[in-house]
Length: 150
Ligand SMILES: *[C@@H]1O[C@H](CO)[C@@H](O)[C@H](O)[C@H]1NC(C)=O
Image 1 (cartoon, rainbow, N blue to C red):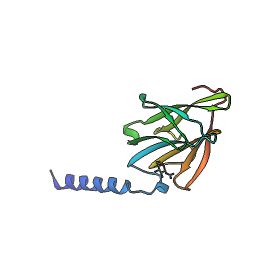
Image 2: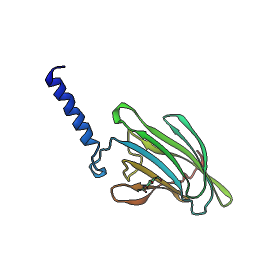
Image 3: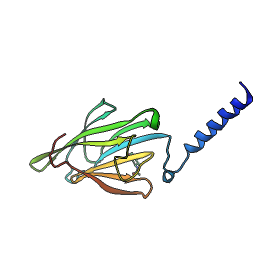
Image 4: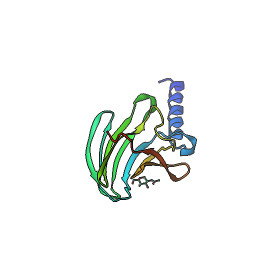
């Protein structure tokens, strides 16, 4: 290997290593990401959650209050598209509420509250709340759909 090629590789290595350490506020994160969805239904009902990651069925789960669903992955941006969608259902009095939610997509923002390492969602009787890793607070993002369907 010529020494300039070698130097180039070293530079790329340090560039990637330093980018990977960027703080969330700088808008770039190359490490492992986590999508966590916690049941915080105010009526303490069980939440049914059934997610797919890039069409791979991640199975149906029943979460008690405070239990969570987790997915961890490396998002390589342009190299690999990551998409996570979930069906959710819970009992709201006499009715069953259902909804289909896009919780992560590497090709566009699915939430106004940004996330980098931890893409945490909290599910309540009014809908989904997202955790903002920059402002360190939860914010209401997506209501349960009015058509009540997956
Ligand atoms: C996000 O969820 C993970 C897993 O439960 C938890 O360890 C972490 O503290 C949460 N992050 C925030 C900022 O709430």
